[in-house]
Image (cartoon, rainbow, N blue to C red; front, side, top):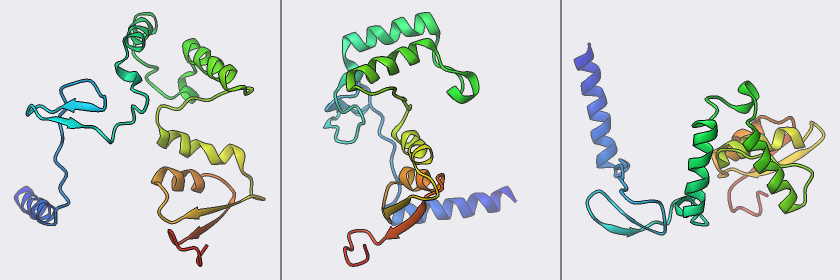
Length: 161
């Protein structure tokens, strides 16, 4: 049976490659920045990183991360709702809140998580969301989690909107 499954999977993989849909993994051997080097020695421009401000390779950030690892270990091992929130996490949220002039701030590990958690606390069944059908999956999921009425329009179609 496993030989049959392997043949079916290999055929599917071959079709994906034939259709130009196979994604080769790109192995990067340098810190993330606007210019990176691949394991094959190619110097390339990086237009797809989320390191928008280039902070991930700044010496001050690296030293602060090392100090946090020394004092608190490497992460919470769970989401804050289950394990709680570390003091350094709350301190950072308070500093950001003060900087932007808000009552409080919530940090998420990724934009997907932020979009997933945005709509539910803000919107009720009395609200409505008008959403592009081609919105990012995280926005679609976030909208599904809230009680607001949902209206979707065909992407870039103003007459449908």
